[in-house]
Image 1 (tube, one colour):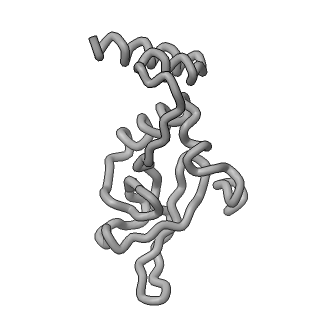
Image 2 (image 1 turned 90 degrees about the horizontal axis):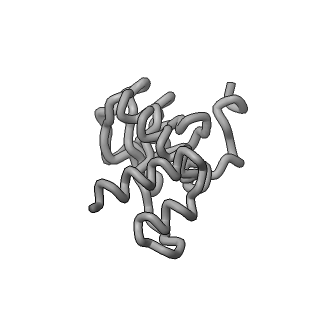
Length: 122
């Protein structure tokens, strides 16, 4: 049964129908949840004793804390949750997840597009 709901939700996502997705999955109302978002580590620094990084999320760049993932290197894809990189992820999985989040309209909603985009940092 759940498999059928997921397939229906994916079809709705491809059409850009987020309210339909909530209905199909039985949510019925807006539910808020924190996501771990995959992004590419583009810079790594140490500031005031903290390991910091600049991570690009499908065109949106944010500063994150790397203290939980000190082994991450520039060029790695990482999962970021509430501003902390928590694990490494392979590039294919990161790109697939970013595409799904974008289809659902969650990427910009979660990160906002305002502060700095990839184009603005070039």
